[in-house]
Length: 210
Image (cartoon, rainbow, N blue to C red; front, side):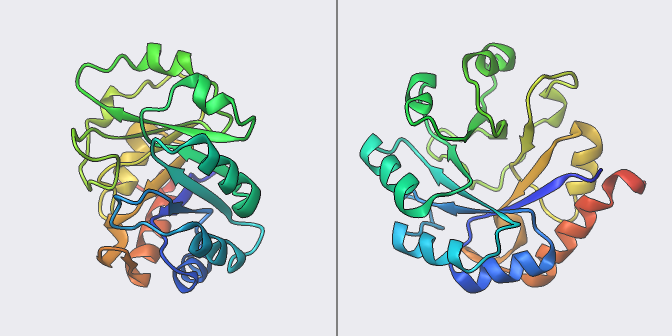
């Protein structure tokens, strides 16, 4: 079975349709105002309405107020919420809604203790650490730090692109790979050829050698 592919940072309905046509399994909409790929809730709803029910819509939030999370759940009804900030387990669990917990790979991070704190039904997303930025850095971390034996779904992010995704999959064996800047022509604008190449390389990674 091939790895699932998520294209994050979708900024309009046309891009959503394009990545679905290319074969993506999920899209991500960024509801974080400080992100260069930010969309407001109304635009996110438009994006979700543009795709079929077979592709997942994941809403990325960063240290949002509970009232806003409830609005996202009620109005957008995403398949999953991706908590990408400093949210505690108690914060994530209070909504009783399927979620992904993002973990930024700080050098001092104890992965085992961090994953034992949360119970995300959508799994853990591992991304590069940056002191002043919550994701979307385009930076890669050492994939060998990730556990080979695990009891949770693993989503790999951070610096992925068409040229390295196959190697990443063979090293990490993730359940899903997540890309944003690695398939863009400019910030917030996905490039169809790059998206297609990324998906093709990811889907065939386990059947080919470098």
